[in-house]
Length: 261
Image 1 (cartoon, rainbow, N blue to C red):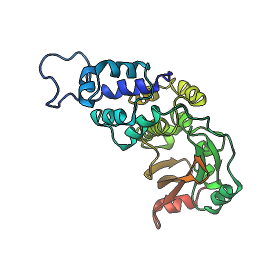
Image 2: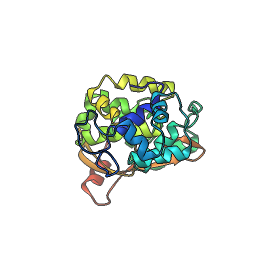
Image 3: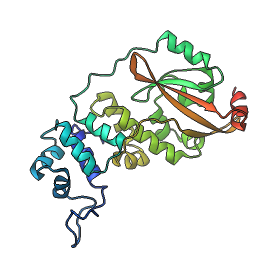
Image 4: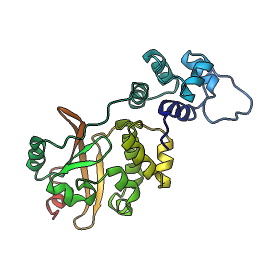
C-alpha cells in the first residue's frame, strides 16, 4: 500500500482517473487502459514521454514546480490534490516532532466545556481531549488513532450514520496531511490495508485536508447529533490540529450534547 515511490504511484493512479475526452487526444479505436495513456498525459503536460516514464517509475523524484503545475493541470487536479502533488516532490521531510500538547492548549480544551474538542497530529493520533470529547466517543481518548478507529473498529460504523462519507474523508485527509514517506505513517497504512474499504479508498489517491463540515453521530446514550466540525492549527506546533465540534444554538443536537455523561 505504501512504497518508496509515492510520487510515481500518485501520478499513475490519477492518470487512470482522467477521461480521455479532450479534442487534443487521439480518438477512435479500442482503449486498453482506463484514463489517459502515458503518451497522452505527457503531451497534455508538455513534457516528453520518457521523462514522464522516469517520474512514474521513481527514477526522477524531484521535477520542477513548472512541470508539477503542468501535470496538475493535465490531470485536472483540484487545489488540494495539486498541493499534495507538490509536497510529494519536495525533499523528504524531517520526522514529525513528538512534543506533547502544551499546557496552554490543554487549558483551551478545558475552557470549551460545552463543546467536544481534541488535539490530533497529522498521523491522526489523538494527543489530548476534553471531557466532552471523550464522552462523545471512545475514539477521542488520547492514544487512539482516528483512522484506525474509523476503519478497524466495528463500533465506528454504528457511531457514524454516514460512515461511507466519513471513511472517504478520513482516507483523503490522511493522505493530504500525513507524509507517506514517514515510517510511522507507512506502518499505519499497512495496518489499515487489512480493511477492504480502506484499500479501495486509498487506491483512489484522493487528497483533501480536514474541513469545517457537518458531522452526524448516533450516540448510544443521547441519540443523534449533528455537529459542525472546526479544524484549527496550533500556532508554534503546526503538526498539531485542534478539532472542535459545535451544535447549532437551540437545536436538538445542542440539547443532546448537554446530556452527554
